[in-house]
Amino acid sequence: MAESSTNVSNTENLLKYMSLDQKGAVMAEYIWIDSNGGTRSKTKTLSKAPAGVDELPEWNFDGSSTSQAPGDNSDVYLRPCALYPDPFRRGDNVLVLCETWDSDGSPNKFNYRHDCNRLMETHAKEEFWFGLEQEYTLLGPDGWPYGWPKGGFPGAQGPYYCGVGTGKVYCRDIVEAHYRACLYAGVKISGINAEVMPSQWEYQVGPCEGIEMGDHLWLSRFLLHRVAEEFGVKISFEPKPIKGEWNGAGLHTNVSTNATRSDGGMKAIESYMKKLEARHVEHIAVYGEGNEERLTGRHETGNIEKFSFGVADRGGSIRIPRQVAKDGKGYFEDRRPASNADPYQITGIIAETLCGGL
Image 1 (cartoon, rainbow, N blue to C red):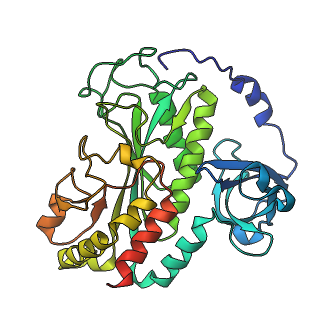
Image 2: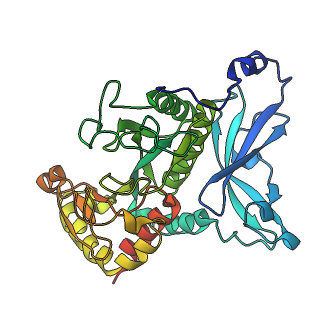
Image 3: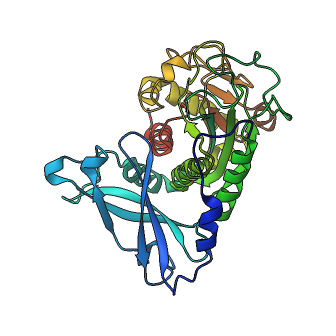
């Protein structure tokens, strides 16, 4: 990295202990999404390696400490829903993605996965495929983008997108480490690139079918925070981390169904545009906090107040790739979601809108 961190990492000391025999026990890191759109986790010791989520026990946590429950009824239950190899502890150790449930047997109000999964199961015949493009910004301990002059600004945008070389890209070591961690865990990460604003990067996850999209994207976010922790760097998913003439950060969402992928799929895409336009306000409501600062109609965005679409138009709400228009079938890209949006809410409302019929 370009600068030394003020955080001290003792990873080299830790490595001495990572090779110790666990005597057949397995460490399971239970991960959940909190009330602020962040990830939390804690570790449970298992007596053997689980073959699947069905072999994992439910657990609970103090929801009053995460603003997910009141203090006088604070137990929130963790129900395992997806299982992955642990790239940090390795061996038989696992990462466990969980849903949050209240003590009365209902999903916690911040459990967006439950409704999303129900929608995906209801519309399974549509065979929804998603691909999400997660943009994020790397910040130093002081909260300023990494590599930027303290309190100042680097040169104007231009050389940074997909850049190579000192002064053009920052924190490639973290990006590479995250990529490997995702691959090890089985996340369907499909690529990475440096973005238009310096110290901003993007990685892509997908294609994933149905509920798998939200699961893989949330686990990739957990892994990114966890990797950056080793380097003393902060990860920001804010859609407009730096005000002014800098590109914001989005979570562009690529969507296809069996109908759009089949011959004549452009007709299906065009019919979907009418449905998406009719529910533009509802979509914007769940497409991320602070998105109004990003969707201004400038810096490769559409205007938050109106819906638009076009072929190869990066200034529209929806972009239809030119190759799709040429082939007459394929997918479309919803460019409205902000980088901090919940993938379960995004994919869920898209499935609901496209299959609801108007």
